[in-house]
Amino acid sequence: MTSSLRLRAGGVVSQTEMAFLDYARPGSHFIRHESIASASSSSPSTSMPLHRLSCTARLPSSVAVSVSSPSRVSLGYGGGIRGGRARAASGSVQQEEIAAVGTISVGQYLVQGLREEMEDEIAVDVDGLKGFSYAAIFDGHAGDFSAKYLRDELYKECVTALEGGTLLESDDLEEAEEALERAFLQTDKRLVSRLETCTDVLEAESGSTATVIFARPDRLVLAYVGDSRVVISRNGKAEDLTSDHRPFGRDKKAFAETKRIQEAGGWVTHGRVCGSLSVSRAFGDIPFKTQKQKMLDSGVAEKRWTESFAAGKNVDGEWLTALPDTASMLLEEEVEFIILASDGLWDWLKSADAVAFVRKRLQKHGDVQRVSEEIAQEALNRGGQDNVSVIIVDFGYICSLIPFHILASFLRALFKLF
Image (cartoon, rainbow, N blue to C red; front, side, top):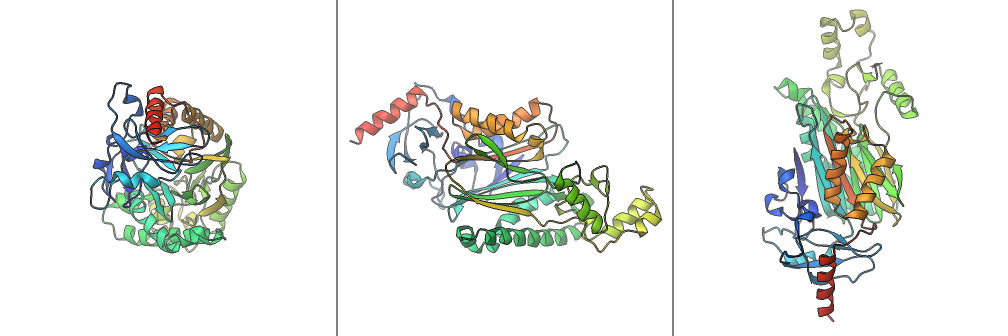
């Protein structure tokens, strides 16, 4: 279980990375369980080192106070205090760089179910591109090569297509959506070329879904292929921003995907592309793209279909595509948080259930990282066997109860300033 963290100098990560940031270097990968900070481990008797905090929303812009180990505390409606450490490019810890924390905090978690392999990957860039946080989940299949490739490469292509983030600030967010379409297709083109040269058969036939968001407190842009979903909480009500790319079911999306595949010359059997692939859009998967004839010949040899059936298929059509669906929106305070998760979560929790679960726990303890872990475990507790990947982007509008010793320490330090 690995995840990717990109951290720029002067940036601040959420409590996901705060407590054990020494394990993470810019662009490095690290084991998730080594980077989790347990906010519940502090006690009133624990000594409290000095950290510089930022007070956002309706609180003063910057206050220096004594707090417990770096964990997020919400104070009052819409307000938040975020503490922690930021690693500068030199590798030293710069406390003064904490003064300009934004209102976004991010929790991320991956857990392996009963599957033999962990093929999910996560990539997060907190408060990087023009103040936008990047979050992405890649759910691999037939091996993890494609998912790992996307984890490392898709963000770079997105940055280029978005003109360094300029298009994310455009008055016309459709330009940003179109840029992400180009980034997805260009990345898939490069990935397919790479897969065609792989000597390892398992690597060569791998593929992956991808769901990507660029979020700032005032706007959101997303693009996706596959069945990892994005759901927002709008005043406690769940709102789906994605629709699964699956050729299965009775909804309009499933019918549209099936029709597209059939018109391109492919087919759907038992809700799967060519009777094999459960998603109708994906990266990689060269047997369904550049090696369709080879796949058909193999099926004939293995007696999965007849020669006449194979001969009637159009191998020049685009059976499987990495062209994403996209969406964008301006955000207001009524949007409380975003849940981005793989199908390992959504197969067991409805969108409304997931939003209610996250909201209740943010109100209870305010720790977005802890919530990410709890909801992933909830999917497994309900019978899930698939791998589960979760990213929660919290805008800090939900009030949580503050442990008395933390509140007392804050007030004492605050009074000393005046």
